[in-house]
Length: 163
Image (cartoon, rainbow, N blue to C red):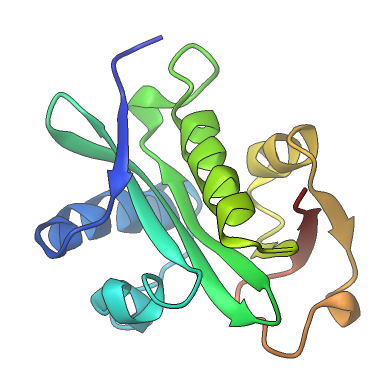
């Protein structure tokens, strides 16, 4: 396993977070989406780091190589958003996604959350396997709480029961 640090997002990380997320969305998955179409990424402290939410980055050799956000949606529930890992450090041998998810789930337990929901696209097949392997169950869109922040590209939904 490589030397990966998971830490909370700071304002100085804003550009590096975009430089991880946008190429994965556009070049790897062919989802042409701009930073402007993801306004949450411009206001991470306000959007994610409030209530019981948080945003973390994975750092290797001083560079951000992964991200994950937890958006408080009320009623002791949250939405997992923006989980991205750079291709160069993807996979079990690096463990970046697992470290990010472990930090998020520990925070969720400590914060007293009961459920974590997420939406993803059909294109992220490896992500589907990862979530399912880590205790997320697929649910119908109709089973999402009203407060869940839907993205236009979301077509597959998951729920994790905390605790």
